[in-house]
Length: 73
Ligand SMILES: [Zn+2]
Image 1 (cartoon, helix red, strand yellow):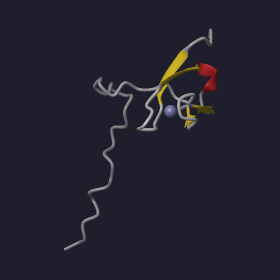
Image 2: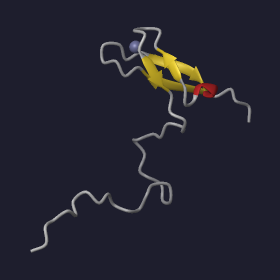
Image 3: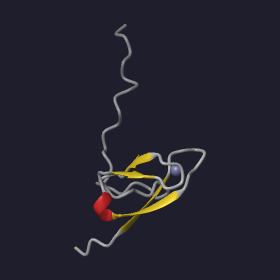
Image 4: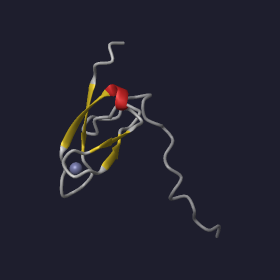
C-alpha cells in the first residue's frame, strides 16, 4: 500500500472541534491537537461513515442483548 492516506479527525474538545489531518501511520496512536493540546487517539480502523446504511455482512446481525433481562414470571 502507498500509506499516504490522510485521516481527518475532529477534536473531541467541544470548545475546539478543530479538524486535524493526520497520516494513516498515526492509527492507534495519540496525537496532540494543535488548537487546544488535547490528546486524541486515532482509531486503528478506518472511520465508518454513519450516514450510510449498514452494509450486509459488515455489521453484526445479532441484536444487543440489553432488553432481554426480564424476570421470569
Ligand atoms: Zn482541540
